[in-house]
Amino acid sequence: MLGNLVPPLLGLCIMVGLWAFVALNNDSIPGPIATWEAATKLFADPFYSNGPNDQGIGWNVLSSLQRVGIGFGFAALVGIPMGFILGRFTFVNRMFEPVISLLRPVSPLAWLPIGLLVFKRADPAATWTIFICSIWPMILNTAQGVQRVPQDYLNVARVLGLSEDKIITRILFPAVLPYMLTGIRLSIGTAWLVIVAAEMLTGGVGIGFWVWDEWNNLKVEHILIAIFVIGIVGFLLEQFLLLLARRFSYESR
Image (cartoon, rainbow, N blue to C red; front, side, top):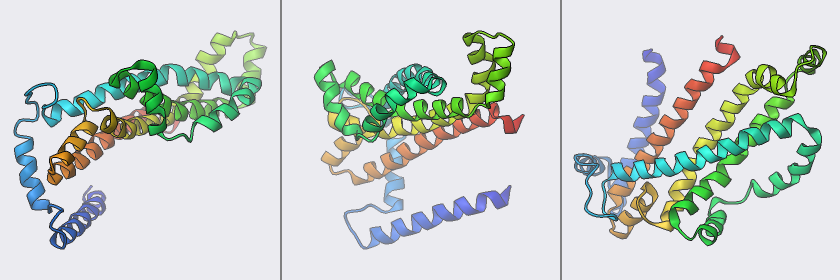
């Protein structure tokens, strides 16, 4: 147990040491101690509210998570079934492959103006950006999982006269589940990455807007705190999905 903790702790110590060294030689960057003192004050009341544009970091994180949850949820509802269809039917796969290859590399910030143009409001535009950027890993990983199901399984299903619904629920879904969870894990990381950038441009309440607001107020220590908060939340989301993936993977059975 202790041996497993030593490498990550050592890595964190090296990071903090480099940070302190850079701060010593650059007055514009707060060091670890100054940032820690600012963090203790900031987290003394993370859920204060002095109006719609002056709220604690806790409310900003929750607002971002809400947008991520909505956009990610819509992406899962569309992406996973579409992945099954693309993996199951070769013609459909070949038909949509160039479309996916064209749209998948597009930067998240390129989609945001389209959302603002269509929805006229910042919140749905940010949700749209999360949706369109996080859908691709779920589509591609689910389709790959379906394509890797042994053909013998499907041949036996046909011999037994199973309907397409039963083939999907009894054969494809259990076999594809680990691939689906991998796609979901990649998508949630993408969604959390995208929302920070989107909120910087749209404003309102959210961790991205909070970072930009602190920059305008020249509170660099708060920006550093936000970087750690963003990283910790993203890490926890990924670890939760990794736990689910291990729970449902064949290797753990």
